[in-house]
Length: 180
Image (cartoon, rainbow, N blue to C red; front, side, top):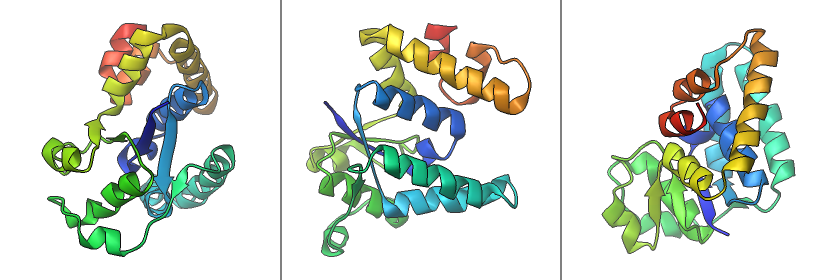
């Protein structure tokens, strides 16, 4: 089973996170993250409004409970030897290395150059390509997760969601086309 480190930018957006973690629950891959990645999620949720951070912290507690072995730690000296175009992302690379990840799942291609990742034995994959690839191999579990995510989006928003529209809005256009 592939071990995939999830960057903050793919776990902060709700639909994208629910799709990724829902598919992970099917056994398609082992998700990983660090305390700092989860903390960035909580801080980013402040944008939602006054209750955003508290809600995110509750969700983070549930995620930690569901995957107790997903959180990785490392010695600070690991970051000292690493380089990325944006120094603020070095902790993500360190977490991937420390967790023996196969890839980093991120929307942030420019700050995770494939050459630098390859030197560390890592790949970079965007969440849409990852989910579409898993769907290509075994569509039924991905379809079920998507239906569950859509049902929850409808419950929370009080409006009907077209699957294709929901996934495209969540920046998952290739998966949207496959499921739409």
